[in-house]
Image 1 (tube, rainbow, N blue to C red):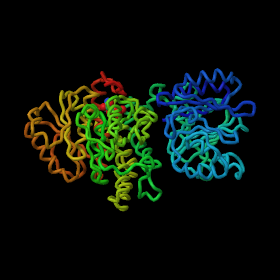
Image 2 (cartoon, rainbow, N blue to C red):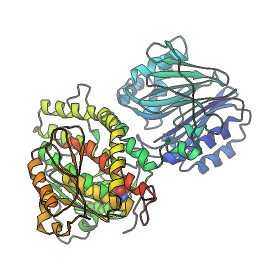
Image 3 (cartoon, rainbow, N blue to C red):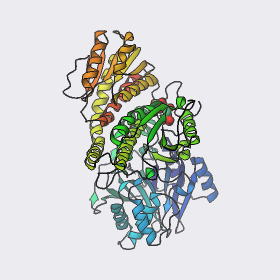
Image 4 (cartoon, rainbow, N blue to C red):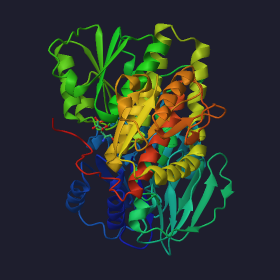
Length: 609
Ligand code: M6R
């Protein structure tokens, strides 16, 4: 996720901004840059890679001690490769304006085409460069920059947090937000805007939480917040932050994992951004337009990404009628009898895009002449570079070793792929698409509303079951991959042995293990398979096994602990189930005093076999 800081004050601004960017490093980035005005000119310094590279360039560019207003950006690529030319700030063609941006302008291609027709040229692949030129264009007809900025933002659809500089007002910064974080820091004789509080926490604890659809104009001694729609003034309470720096980086959460679990509603929103038609009846995945609807799809992945694929198979087969095979990458890569050809498409799923087995599987698939498709979170990662096409999950950096929000974003993308291929193959009606898209659009608010009570329930249950040494997780149909994921999360975080099973498989052996000390976590939702899993639960109870059942209101089930979540019809209920499983594992591990964000023996990115 990109990091932004803007500063207007009395201190040397460049070091303030560079240090602010350093305190945003935890968000992850692939390039960085800063901008400021000096001697009537905009200065922009950008570098690929870590902040050290930027500092070296700044040193060469000469001292900027007199500058007391500057902005900076760390970029987590979403449009265009992680290269210096795509790094921010971006300047307008006439060199008067510079901007840094976090988010995605959905309609930037249309705006770009219009600006290009008017003679604008673009040096980067970014939507950001389009936005700054749109502001410059609107300035020609609006009374001042503020009006031009607002007019351009009203035309830009999507998500943005931006900071804008004008060479004619070297001590002033403009900023705005829509569906991306931006916080204003109120200092004494200095003001800040930033994506997150740590960027300016050493200087001020007084903040204004800007809302979507707001613009702010600020200099060292004053600031004004206005509505983007009509520039009417808005008054916000100035709040005082009590967190220390570490807590601030985790957004006030105890661990990155908890923060990332709570980010999931936003992750769903972000994954949908730019991928739905205006009428909300079609999915737009332009990355796949040049590829055929697969005749046979092979999904290959490891760990949590494999579980996403296993879950996605249900949707791809049922909604798009695409036949799917799925395999763990470390098995796929050593199969002697791989039968792949040009009619096969191999979809590799990887959060990091660097997992050695998954990357090897991708290369083998390419050698066999199959079409290859990557589903990755990290832009420019090896898998993203080597696959013939790539879809990005846009979940932002995942810091906790245990994967949470990445899985949600992968499932969301697999859902979009199922709708997209269903529409292209003509097997999913417009009505069917509309219904599913409406369900998707409702998810963020539903999940947001549920997360606090889910967390509380998970906390309560974790206290009750933390002493167990073993756990079964049971599910059927699309809940079976979720059972596997629940078990993986519990073992990797709390070191409690846990096994995920297809509930119908229990009686073929595993049930021999069940006794009073071996609890079961069953996912028993209100669907066609409910009577089946209820029978499996009864079998467990007949062996004195204790049971937690995650179910929906009104379902008739008698177990030790019934955990009810709102019903969502069909497989999209997974988006409410998954956070429950994550929170239960998180709370159990935390209660047991385990290192939640960095469990023993595990690495975030498994780049060796
Ligand atoms: O980066 P990838 O998605 O390729 O990683 C795959 C697995 O290593 C990863 O999901 C792992 O299982 C996590 N520890 C799960 O929390």
